[in-house]
Image 1 (cartoon, rainbow, N blue to C red):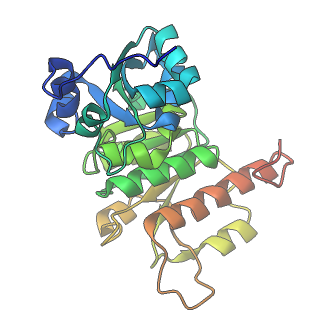
Image 2: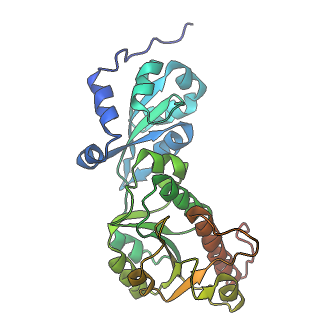
Length: 286
């Protein structure tokens, strides 16, 4: 049986135009919708629900992608998403990538109120303060997910969580853990402290060494890591809010670590310390 013909032929279709506008932050905020591109992101979006409602509301797919990822398309239909078969030009018109993978989903905003994160009693949190690069934000979110963090907080001075590059860089992790957005850094720190969470600011010029923190056994309790801007780090007023300012030791000749790498090291150090305090030394153990 020949493959089905595309349903959306023209990039001028109103549905295509509406999807294309979501590449712009003001339209995302107005509609409270964002784009999720590629099979991994769409698969996770189809599996995600917020307050009982499916997150994925619409899916555009080329005929080839619909056949290759038939399980994802079936999942999208199962949760009630509108599925459109489209030609490659339509997908290219919607997509923000150079080489689209043939699937573009439209999803409802899924950020979590900061108060809900505090009420859940988090033990490991990543706070992104003044992080402006969307790729870095998405990668740190992915690292937090991999390390078993309970939540991520983006301050009001940080990049838009739903920037297409942030969504892609998270590789589906955006759909795995609670993320609060637009929280002033002072409020984030104060709320976490009130919830019994120790605040560690990650800074290459920090007074405390991460190895020393681990050796002293001070990292087994609830912890929030605050990560700063890619270019200038954390301002002094933000550093002053932390219980400690911690540097990742550089044992070789590298000048420094980039934000995402430093975040991964810090989050995994906390994850190991917390698991060791409950009798499990490995972050990959049960």
